[in-house]
Length: 260
Image (cartoon, rainbow, N blue to C red; front, top):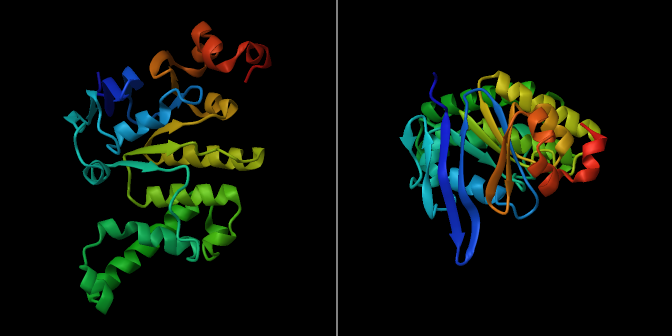
């Protein structure tokens, strides 16, 4: 049996008397799209911060590719291939779309900072390589038509997509998407879902937090449900839709009849 890409083992985070994440365990298989859902305040964003080491765990472990990364600094976790995009991604709004993605490649630079300043051969080589990679990322995310536009002029859905493109520039093995469909209309959501599937098809495992239940049910291989910091269910979308604890805690009785 193949080892999971990542295992979350009995992860707990306390803030004083508040237990935000309470003894949560699950695994992420390589090549899947796994969604984490739950009501507001269920602990989803805190769990993301624990996995990416932006917050220290009170107890428990995060095992990635067989290695305990629980206490590692965030930049080392990122270098291992766990990349988190944010609800409000830091985007250089006065730069073009492609330049934003080029800048995001600079962690992989072989040239020194001085080399970039003085335009050394290594720096010029890096710049050409980064621009080619950025163009490829934008093409397969469906952003080829807006490459040369200023980020400040993009509609909301495209800004979200640019945030994902910036995350992809770091060459993730596991991409953590924080509400990638938030605030989108139905057309934007459909495009974003296609984009996330495309990322997975290129060999990147996806872990996402999302409130849009229709999108979650359509895009996920498996779903983990949190409520008051505890995991109350885990399984494929069909099983989650019919789970009594989930219906009570999150989906609501009326949603049972609506269907997805």
